[in-house]
Image 1 (tube, helix red, strand yellow):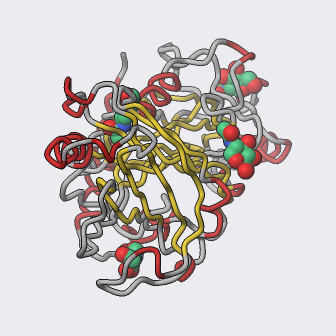
Image 2 (tube, helix red, strand yellow):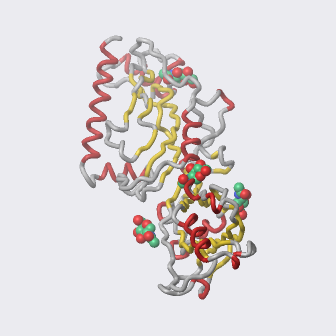
Image 3 (cartoon, protein in one colour):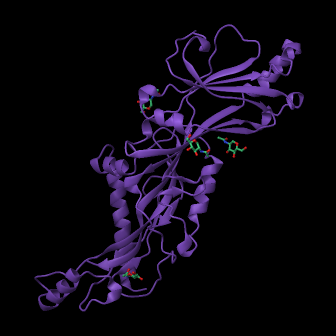
Length: 373
Ligand SMILES: *[C@@H]1O[C@H](CO)[C@@H](O)[C@H](O)[C@H]1NC(C)=O
Ligand SMILES: *[C@@H]1O[C@H](CO)[C@@H](O)[C@H](O)[C@H]1NC(C)=O
Ligand SMILES: *[C@@H]1O[C@H](CO)[C@@H](O)[C@H](O)[C@H]1NC(C)=O
Ligand SMILES: *[C@@H]1O[C@H](CO)[C@@H](O)[C@H](O)[C@H]1NC(C)=O
């Protein structure tokens, strides 16, 4: 290793120190525009971060592996794991509340509004999938109610409800009615069509979830105490979330795959080529909101573009002429610049400004090839 890599390391260190300082200035224009290009209104400061849903971990980990050669799927525009177009996957936490409607209804265990704030979706995003997941925690497996059948009803709220109003006196649209045995740990519902309508904030009044003890199961015969126990086994362990996939065409450029040689070879040379640079997100103060990866091999371009330019230097006709002129008049005309000519994307798992967990594909994050331009 000659002095060049050391100088490069120093330069890179300085760059990140300056970037860190720039980002440290609260409200600075650089910070705002950088986060805007990442689809965020500001640097997220997750207050009570939710655990990362296992489906997102699975997809993220699948992507972290280097793709197997040319048969790698086109990850920029499709979520293969869910078989839908998209480059952004969000898991929205439910922000709704339980509804206490005064007079208790005999078989109704719980009534809850489900609300998912869609204001983080940007205008250019096309929603391609929305799936509601209702989880019953493991504790809810009560021996005394193992075989019990419950009934679930899911309504789309179409009109604002007033406090104290019973849910059935205003306008709801029944989306799903199904029975389930308590052995089920989670239930999934396809809400793609409903969620598309929620892009208009005034039309997003959420859902109403009702769970009752099945009356077909001769619940009338059940003593009230047993009914109460059955309901208690359901209602405090409910966890609902909405998985939403969307496609931002602008950030989805077709078929730009990561080169199979993942790391650039280290050969001592002063010629223009990619140099290794590992960016650690904690160095730039982003460790609180980026869940994974902790950093990545971003690389950068450095080196000479001397006369005569060879094919490996990926130059343009203009650059070839510029080196010729430079060789005749080194003072008056500089060498062409060594710049990235091929970049590839990475996936980042993070908390957005609303503490939702997001897995998003970002273009142009890794330098794969350099050229004299
Ligand atoms: C719901 O349950 C499924 C399977 O039991 C699990 O994979 C998933 O992570 C759970 N979701 C939440 C939000 O806890
Ligand atoms: C949704 O989020 C936006 C942006 O933070 C906020 O202004 C709005 O009040 C939220 N809506 C609801 C109903 O909580
Ligand atoms: C969900 O519903 C949409 C529209 O109704 C449909 O196009 C899509 O195939 C469904 N997805 C699944 C996984 O069933
Ligand atoms: C120029 O491109 C070729 C493939 O197109 C690549 O193998 C080579 O590494 C590139 N040169 C540099 C300096 O990155």
